[in-house]
Length: 120
Image 1 (cartoon, helix red, strand yellow):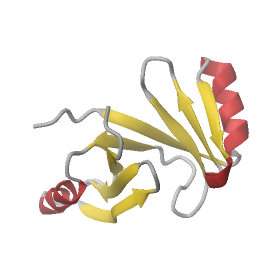
Image 2 (spheres, rainbow, N blue to C red):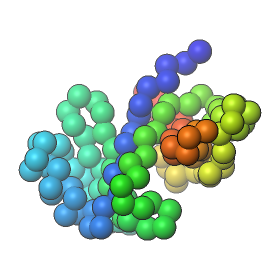
Image 3 (tube, rainbow, N blue to C red):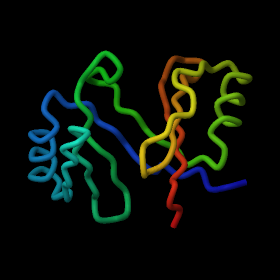
Image 4 (cartoon, rainbow, N blue to C red):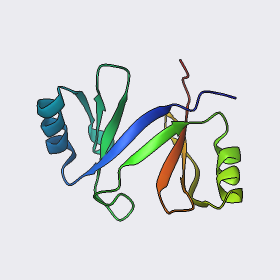
C-alpha cells in the first residue's frame, strides 16, 4: 500500500491575494499567485503546502479541504462509497498538474484525493 500522506490543503478566501498576504505575515509561509486560476499557493518550508481558492458555492468559507495522496483515485472513490461515503466529484484533471476527486465520509466531511502528473 502506498503512503497516504496529506499532500495539499485548500483554504477558501474572499480575496485570495489578501489571504496570501495575511498568512505570509502571520506564519511566514511563501506565496505564489497563479493569476490564470485566481489561486494563491502557499508553502510552509517543511514540504507541506496548499492554496487559497476563491469562496464560491463549491468552495464555501469555513470548509477547508484536505487532499490525500492516491495511486488510484477512481478505486479510492468507489471504496469510499462502498464504505458509506458519497462521491462529490469524480476524478478530474488539473491541467499540467495532476488529477483529483472529492468524497464525503459517512459523517459528511469532505476530503479530496490527489495524484500528480509529475511524481517526485
